[in-house]
Length: 302
Image (cartoon, rainbow, N blue to C red; front, side, top):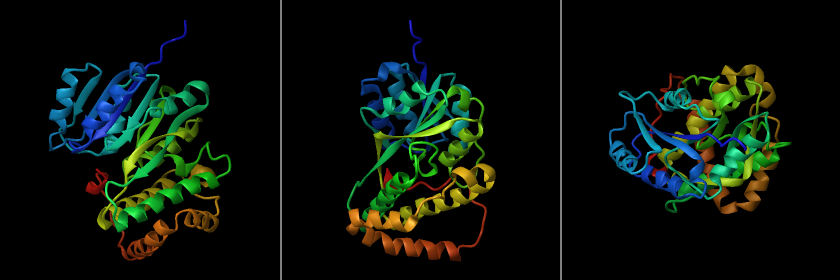
């Protein structure tokens, strides 16, 4: 008789009263819910009704468990706690503000079960607009550009820096029990990518399964996310210098990728271009300073 899959899910959360119920309800209703042993919601000292909502759902479902931190320490700390708590064969990490689809869980776990050398999986992230604004159209182009960048990489399913997004990832026990994330200016997904490779395992991008997420609808949140990605990329490349030379964000043709994306999404591209240029100027003028591991919440993506 084949061994039953031992699967846990951890959900880092900070002030997610608008989203946590939808995500937990989605997990409970999906057809592969029986594969899940535990769903750990790790609250980063939330100050809204997140705790109350999770506690209410946990009363009617013994798989849902809540861990409440007495001080805000960031997502890195929440993930590290999840690594210690879980003893599952496979650990899935979901952001609190996503919408999962029918095949999200199977998409994450199937490559890990099939191939011994794959240690980390990630799904395609499908952007959606909560409302149509100038900024949300620009945000859509950023997402389309990232997807074209992924496709432009040779053998893009494997060890693709751009493909790993922390909204939905899964890891084998052989990997997550060996690692500890180092806090910094964002980039938990990038840190997972480099640490997996350093432990001798492959990463894998699953194109035919996805989760949905909301793009920013105002300019402040847009630049929060943009700056976070830029700062995180620079920091993680330095931290994992040797392996980033081989697998880091390089070795693709940005001009060709941009043209292909623009031809497919011209309206979004026209709205994106001014924000891109403004972002470049802002980063050049911005003085270097220490960035907190606890980034500001982008409220319009909730």
